[in-house]
Length: 400
Image (cartoon, rainbow, N blue to C red; front, side, top):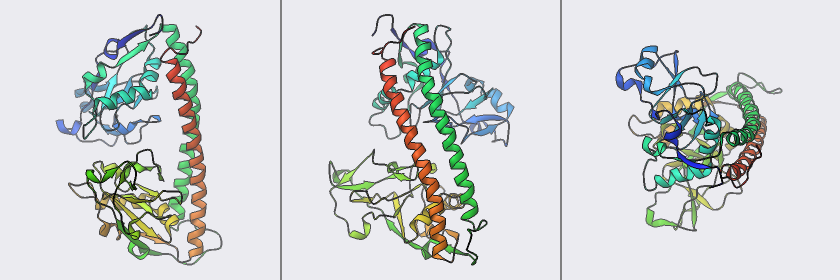
């Protein structure tokens, strides 16, 4: 510990650390407007977001006064993807949270809330939380564990200087987030028009028809394997964790010692689909299999849609129409969709292959631009994390 620094528990720096609840359990219905009610997805990897928020009435909000949040509070996810943190922005005057979020409200004038936010957002803190949860089927942190989180505290002036340096990186990342949101919005608006046939490309006028997926390709079921089949090197098995932003991510890899027939091996252009998962939000998410993928297959909770129109169908799978059909076919008690139901999904479809190809190319160009922005953002985030490790440990001191 550097000279002048000390370790303190988070509870010693905060007012009472608490979490929320679900208003429907106490008899309150969801409202169309009113007080924002935040779920865990509102505490995203990229900061605060109202995407996924609901609304509750004033009466429910008053009865849940214990979990009221306001601008400047720190929020932390304590179930599922544990340890994500964000600060409630000034635009939120008052809101409430569910039981998957902890509220941390810094109380001491000698403590910088922004410094605490940066400290808690370190990868090392997230790693420590994960170690606490080793062996648990569903990761979760207790409020006691949150309260006992240790924070390395420099003097206040040094806290402010460190927070200001790291906030400069946050501002640059925020600019990228806004550019990315705008690009995604433009792409979504164009896709909604062009994939429904509302907006036609120049040179095409032939009528479209409704086609079911079973008319366009086939589903390939996933591989069932046991823990005894898992090895350090072998056949890669793709799972839901390998889908990230419509692309294949190999950060989390599982290999098995099983030989499978060629038809069950992943092919370039296959569309990987999550068809069963503990989280309903993950059902239906998709990724295109690239040519660069090593020899692989997919697990039993996944399916693959194989079609000569893979680029176009993948774009269809990003639409609201697809999400509506997924939601309609979800099991009542089990979060899953069957391949037979999936094959009945229907979409407007061009009658000319040339139009299919041109639409695909237009939308893929947006995807390439979006991917480029994500790569830049990731680079910034990694650089910031490296700087955080130096500044928040005291290995690199700032002049005050």
